[in-house]
Length: 401
Image 1 (cartoon, one colour):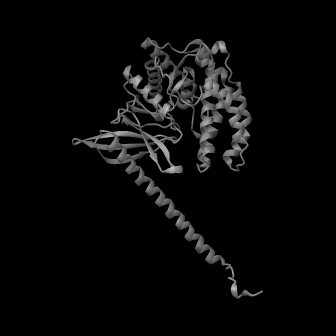
Image 2 (cartoon, one colour):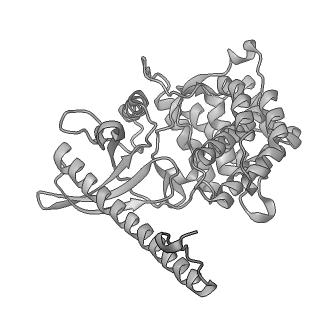
Image 3 (cartoon, rainbow, N blue to C red):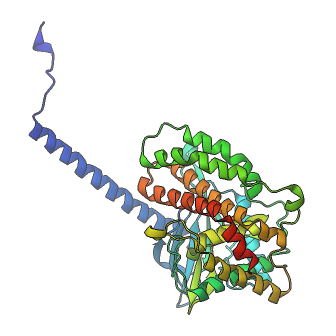
């Protein structure tokens, strides 16, 4: 063989290989830092252009990203107009949102405010009169439409999150009253042809098992997927057990609901809920599902030693306040006997709904933190099992309202 016209491939020693590996790590770190910086600069420029070009809110002075959400991106923006500073809340909606869903959310908020529910974050209209702006990012095959909306920035303290939910008794009662006031304010809201793409909960529960099985069949090897596959039979069993006869379904009141009512979407002052936001999951559904989901959000323990248990004393405070406020308002009726009878089913409808959210979020983006989403999934599975094992105690709590 004539080696004169060939190039010998190099074999590096361990020291040289390590040096190159470290260089690659530094390049990776630099690229990540550059990507983060460019993302921040782009968002600042984009939000500045949207507010200054599409709204009559003055010039943008400062922009802050607000963390804690999992679906949309949120920002606090300080503007100045006629020498006066104002703070507004700006949402960049998730990529998958449909225009009719935004219109449903915004029209429901406006209807609530028109009926005296003034603690919801209202919307600023753009110069064209719409309550949202559509911007196209990219060109050609890479083009995608994004939606933005500007809301009032609510006063009060961001005191809790959906996983930091150790409220005081006064706060639990206040939160029960607030959701009652919202339900009452939107009881006659007519969405017309507007709707959430997502089906109503009882219909959703019938189609989820197929989706759950599809995710379980994925070839993924990590602790999240292992835990999910191990617990899938129980998840399917509980999902399939939530069946309500048609004659009883007819007695379950349909109403506009918030559908993401948890402590992290509220503002507090002096142990009182004084503001509510994030209506983007709102839809028309059975009202008792909102109560079941809310109790799972507000009253399930996230503490390590009690993770997943439902504090029934807190549930009772919340539900009593809800019932009492509706009786006081005299519009929407309180929960009826049939709704209360299906409280265990609706609690677990809430758990299954959040299991669905967790699974969809993770399997749609495998770059998410495995251990974070495993904590979310295991919490809801534990709470689901707790509800199944304590149905009689739950019904005893309901009977004592």
